[in-house]
Length: 207
Image 1: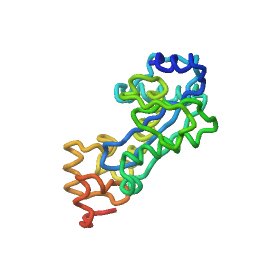
Image 2: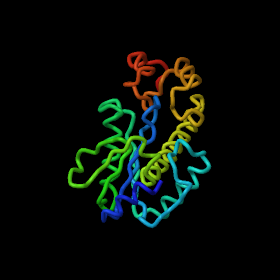
Image 3: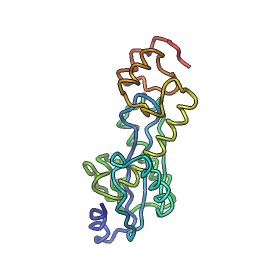
């Protein structure tokens, strides 16, 4: 995982920020984006694409990454903003905002296939499957995923009948059946997503 960053460090860069998001596919909840700069000397074989890790391992690494990172930031973009600008642009905005919120300015940007257009003064690479190729992107994916899971678990406490802690907002068979039965929670669902859009003008059990 560190091989990609090593080639960048060898070029003289030292503050390589990895960016990623969690939650592009769900019907509800925010998309959460993170940016993370790891020390060039740091190595951890456990760090990988967050989707390939168990929840337990992600949470252990979440605390580890926050402790060892030179700097990091996590940003949530609401369902309402996703509906306004679309999920792709919301993800781009979240990653850009995460970089801007860090106290330390990076000298190289790595993203998981997401061009961040406003940083034209910083070298940048947008890697296909970047969270499986670069450790800093994988670290960002873990920060984003755990943060989003926690948000959905809090929503589950507020709306237990929707089972958010189980499906995390993704369009599983169970979730779609619940949505058909109860209707969307107006403040939490993405009305630009097809399974939710049909409820836009049907005020059925909107909370």
